[in-house]
Image 1 (cartoon, helix red, strand yellow):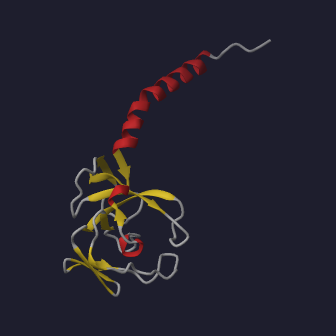
Image 2 (tube, rainbow, N blue to C red; image 1 turned 135 degrees about the horizontal axis):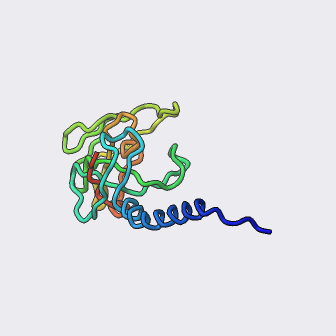
Image 3 (cartoon, rainbow, N blue to C red; image 1 turned 135 degrees about the vertical axis):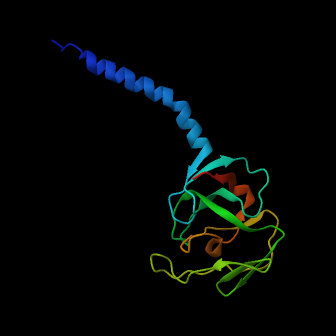
Length: 163
């Protein structure tokens, strides 16, 4: 003979599932409008995602990064970095130092956090249309100094810093 249902358990399950379904629109909104930075490459941790209609120098952008065997990152991820130099501006690499329109941007490291040698991106000229040079503010940020230009078509959103 089957045991009778525990009314408290049934009530608890009904409340749990009701709250879960009530939270779905909020979870969907968070997933589509907020992004969280998990590494120290940026001074902010939470970003509101907006349409990338017009991208300006200094904007934070969220873009798709596709890792490869040449990088220490495998798989496809969303990165958030700041636009340091954009199409039409002059990017110059002098050794491991980077300049945009003559303004110093930063230096590329010689070794990764894993101790592997890093080859800096090499370029000297005007950035072609549809390309962005992006950087994080942390010395260990894995960005255009090593990976080269980001394609504007890969930018999924402007990332507006909240916290």
